[in-house]
Amino acid sequence: MKLIVASVGRPRGELAAPIAEYERRLRRYFSYEAVEVKELASRQASGPREVMEEEGRRLLARIPPGVEVVALHRLGEGWSSVRLAEHLAEQAVRASPGVAFLIGGAFGLSEEVLERARHRLSLSSFTLPHELARLVLTEQLYRAGTMARGEAYDKGSEG
Image (cartoon, rainbow, N blue to C red):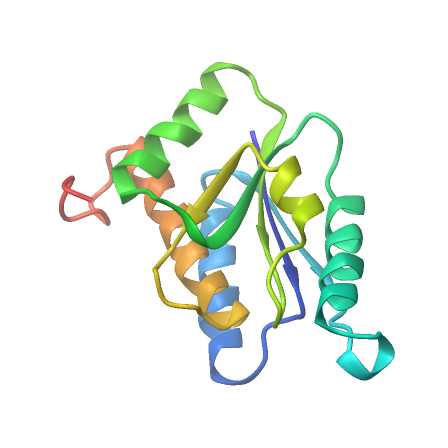
């Protein structure tokens, strides 16, 4: 099964290396692709809503047909590590072509993205910068892979 993490913008600064490391590790367990679309500057658009809508269109254009969309959203459902691992295992058993996790830019995800999503997943009730959200998500996807194989990385099954 393929996992896609699609985000607005590319990792910069000190978080770029840990994100790259977890993405490298993820490839041991899943077919994995990172998709990045360019951030729009608010001066290129008439306002935040237009920026969100255009970034959303760009994200959705990069998601293959048939792939389940999971939108990362502050008001989404909070899953435990175990729940995420179970969800990915369920998708694999169903022979799903894959799961795409979408991370918005500075203004979040558009209504079009949220409507297309099968699930809205919250990493925290805090609003997180997209680089930090991507780091947390890729670590949790890696953890899900280790849990599926019963490897020692996951120290506790509580979540």
